[in-house]
Length: 147
Image (tube, rainbow, N blue to C red; front, side, top):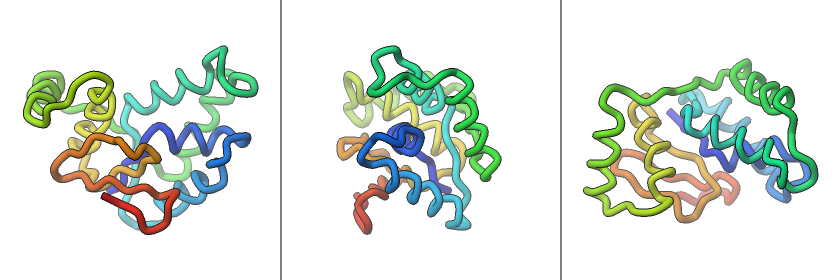
């Protein structure tokens, strides 16, 4: 299964971003892949925080606009994923094992929740996305690039 990182959602929602069309195409490829695709709860919250922030580029999205975008993804087949049991203890143990510090914990929580829900890939435009065993990082805005 494919997990979508927050930045792809933001770019696909924000038509003024240079990455907008490529992000929309990437989401469509995930939808059509036959692998299944989803978004973790933390990514939904982060998306909402970014697009509705008063200092957002252009104008901030309204709650209704952000919600409608997310509803459209679910209607298109996106699964919404919650963390599994004992998430916080597993998250902090994994952070220690992988030497993740600082803001890398935000990526790690997305990665772990995605793994918990069966994802084998995380699609992101973040070149520094934390690497987690069992979850391949794919950069779908750059055709053919993964790590």
